[in-house]
Amino acid sequence: MAGPGAPLGSKTKHSRPCGARISRVGALAPPQNHARALRSTPPSPETGPRPRPRAGPRLPQRPAAGYPVVVSIRGLVALLRNRTFILLSALAGGLLLSGPASRMSGLTLPALAVVLTVSVTQVSPRDFVPLRRVVRPVVSALLLNFVLHGALVLVLARWLMPTRELFIGYVLVAAAPPGIAVVPFTHVMRGDLRLSVHGTFGLYAVCLLLTPALIYLLTGGAVTSPLQLFRTILLLILIPFAVAQAIRPSRAAPYIDRWRGTIINWGFFVVVFTVVGLNREVFLSQPRVLALVSAPALLSSFGLAALVEAVGRRLNLGRATVNSAVLLASIKNSAFAAAIGLSLFGEASSVPGAVLGAWYALYFIYLGIKGERAAGAGTPPTT
Image (cartoon, rainbow, N blue to C red; front, side):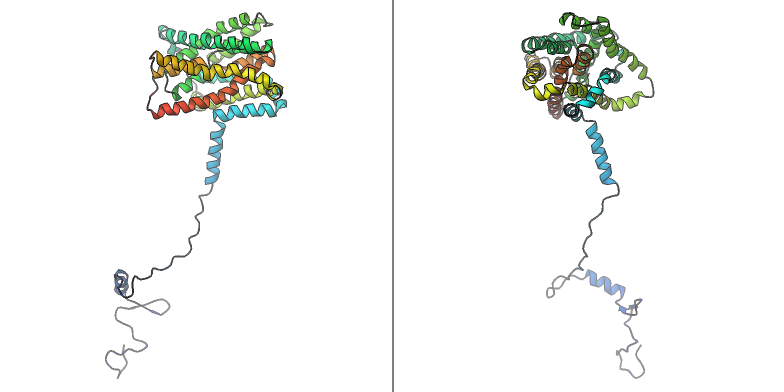
């Protein structure tokens, strides 16, 4: 307020404009309406745009606590469940660590029995009723996996194998049942699920008698104890089927379904690691023998797959049927052959199964690429 005698409109040091407010430090602040007007006033042509207040330096945001740890753990778990990584690790580990491999030789048959048990939990005896539904898939699988694949392997082995022990190893490959990987890769490649499932597991039942008979006949009686051979086949086929049917209604079934692939892969790890470690010298210091043993493995997987696919397309069998036929014709249970060879015929007879398993790691990568192309084309698996 102006003092006495001051002219009209003059201000003293105690006066303040109408509507102004006093800040905490005693300075005059512009009226709120005036400040709001200043913010909304457009820039004048003379002064140009009003400069905006400069923001301070932005500090880098720190990631949430534990985030990198969670990502690394998930990546590690995914790696430890990857089939290709596990098989290649088994091969590399066997070449580097022959001592532990020799101490694990007694675990090959139990590991393979666990693999087969976990694999069969997805199959119920009701899937094979009525029997007329499975006759055609089983006969087709028998022709592809035993007649076609077995004949090719035996002819190449008779021609190429430098020793009788290595030939016996390929006899075991020819007499082995189809590989467990047939069923999961049927999903990947959009194949015929009924043909793959009934053909694969139907042949396991047939192999109870067929496999020991073929081994005994084709090895010329080299089996020291036919009874021991039959007991081994029972351990690896019949007992896993029985145990699997006991697991199906139990509370453990959902956990086995979730971890089935991982258990199978690590069971194969035990077999491949042990067999490669026991035959380390063959892999590292005998390249000629390794090349000879690899030839039937490559031709019976990559080569036979290409042949069956070409013939199937020529006959217009349908993409799903052709894909399942390719899998049944080109995948044997190499771990089965390696384990039987190691337990009944000696270390050298387990080499073909181990070499075949090593090449299967690359073959499965190839099948995965083909499956991704089939998925991109939108081809569903048939049931």
